[in-house]
Amino acid sequence: MRMIYTITAYTKSTLYYVAFGISLVVFDLIQRICLRLGGYHAHKKSVDILNFLLVQSLRILGTKVTFRNPYKLPENAPLIIACNHQSMNDIPPCLWFFRKHHPKFVAKKELGKGIPSISYNLKHGGAALIDRKDAKQSISAIVQLGKYLEKNHHAAIIYPEGTRSRNGVPKRFSPNGLKMLVKHAPSAYVVPVTINNSWRLVEKGGFPMGTGVHLSLDVHEPIKADSMDFDTLFARVEREITSAVIG
Image (cartoon, rainbow, N blue to C red; front, side, top):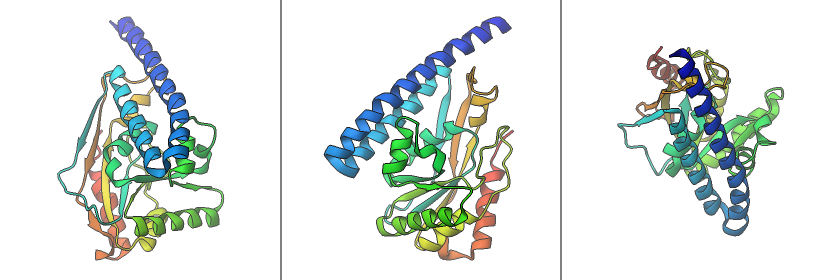
């Protein structure tokens, strides 16, 4: 039985990576065409389709993806979506399920080059690319994103842990990025989101991938950013996210 499971896991992982890779390569070209010929909205539509395909490709692994949101998110105000971070597989579901809010990422600058589709979208889709070794640059990039959110009523996705948890146990949240976004997008709503079981997909290092995983995203009640002082807001966001993480 163990041998059968191992063979199945390697086979499914190989097929998944083939589908994943083809999607990134093909949509790298599609994104470039869409942005050049149709501008922002055409480019965004291409990114939406890409993320739909990336979420669907997880089905090859037997992954079930569940998104639970019992709240009506404001559509006429900026959103700051704060999530725990368990693997790179967190990203396509976040972009897909929050797509109508035009989500932008706060991401490390290394992701902005060399990765088909992903790097192009980060560089041209409005993300804040930060240099973790350069505090001044990081703050400036996040400030600009906050101002953009305030003006355009779009959304930002931020992982306050900074780096992903490899065993699902949340790391200590850092307030800096969230604080800058709240300061420069004062009309925003902060939306805590708990991600579960994404880490199980890469529990063995990424190959083979975990199979039969139930990846879930649970949205908590949106919080008006200026309804309380930041320290109280930050503590509440961290508590709501981490309290819903399962083992």
